[in-house]
Image (cartoon, rainbow, N blue to C red; front, side):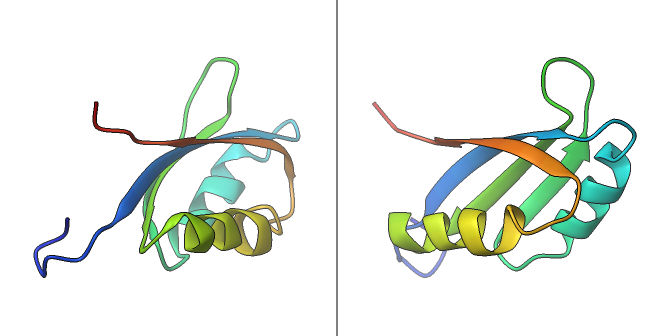
Length: 84
């Protein structure tokens, strides 16, 4: 729940980019609505994004319509946060 009492879906989105594109991809994604952080990292993924949306459908729309449309991305893996 957010501060207004509405349910919010949080997720981490792991992104692989073309060689040399991580910083540009992270910078562009950081400006998208719903993205709370976008950082370029080392390891098997090049960028890790933290995002939030009102529901899973809106999260899917953010990933497919906005994030995957960014030039330089080759693959994404969306990991919704669960509270067990």
